[in-house]
Picture (cartoon, rainbow, N blue to C red):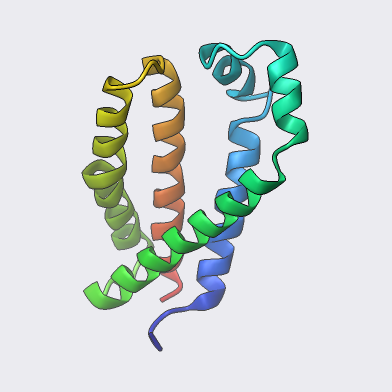
Length: 136
């Protein structure tokens, strides 16, 4: 694990979390996402007041994801942002998109909410792969 740049992992995590705050904000996809989830304004307000546990889990999950990307970058010997971005895309298409699509097909979720969520995941993995690949 000596080949891992932990500063790059922390930066990738920070940018991912910042992107999530923007992505699901009312200025980007937040309003549409809540509407697609069929949340009433009262349910949305109640959810926002009880988000601390969800944020803790989110930070842990994205920190884990960034570390896995860093380990794969090191093991594969990737040494550029473009190689990291390709890795991020392959992880997304091979695991995130496919499992998310299957889960969406067996749920009551609307396809547009899946698109919002999965393109956010794509952006996260591209950011993580690019930063970690570049700072290796």
